[in-house]
Length: 115
Length: 115
Length: 115
Length: 115
Image (cartoon, rainbow over all chains, first blue to last red; front, side):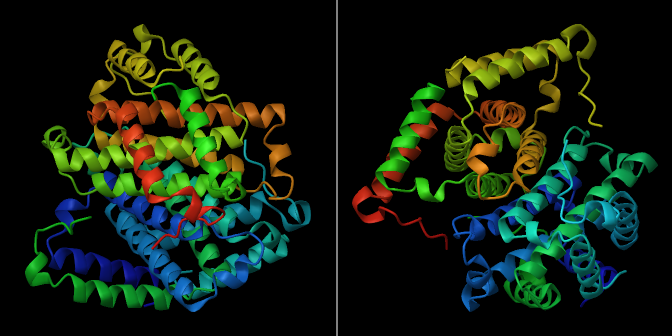
């Protein structure tokens, strides 16, 4: 399922079937998201920077990374749904805002500053 | 753009146009993802649990939540791309694994235990 | 060891003894910190809000929470050390800044707003 | 204040004076901790790995890092307090467990594997 809205529906249906929506308040889902981001971080933390592109492509690690990335995505969609946010529309707005905020000609090769 | 693969391509193109791919190693992108998850957490942290469903639907907060959820999504897609993970396929596998691991009949109304 | 500076020294010595300082660059340590925060989040995420004060005091969970809180603390001290930050002094400055920014008389019962 | 227990008491007193303890349930405090970890991550995310040791010692950035590290510490102590965890004792136990689990002779120069 490659469509964000469809995948959101799948997750909602999955949760409703198990009567898990009672656990899915915003704060709890946000913590669940944090938990999955943490598992992703643990897979990356001690990888040496040199050669990391090859390491993450090794089959076993790449599979584990895919699992954690998927967990992050699925909780993110679930959280957006519970927050009544249309994530596809929000991403479109953000892409437009970023294009306006960071013109390619000005920002080429320059990381955006964080204040 | 509602398709995960298309949105991934848009993000890659956006980064290449600005020559930002040099900053997009796995650890840096993972930290950027954490930064956006942190901003999302800050929007939710002090909301009272009672009535939170209404609060997050108020226009100003809902808009801000959408912005942060979108940021998390966009960095997640960028990270998956850099890690050479097909996030759509990974999510499909995870959905199948979850359906097998948590049969609706056994897990109805029971949050999955964390060890 | 209840002293932040002493505990920082213990962690540095522990890392040097194992020649782990080579892994302890700022980004890697930050990801390790995120990993431990994620484990803490996973322990809390599905606890019901009602009665959570009692649940977290149950011996088995309280012990697990202590382990994860300790992991977060130890990586935090290690990261501060590697960043050459005197965490005790930084905390003192922050406490003073917070006392000035949030006078008790003005902020009694009001959560600080996040922009 | 360099003593963890003292600093915990200072934070409790600060919260009680402002009647903020009503906001300091475990999930909300965990999200606040995540928010501060996110701000720390944002300061580090785009720093180039080469020369990062010098960059983080530059006065302006070092001061900002100290502020965010302090925020993480203060919320961590507050969360431990609310969870009724003696963080000093928990850290001591963890240090002992780590010393037993990772003998220096076996683990010299080897990052601990994550499963």
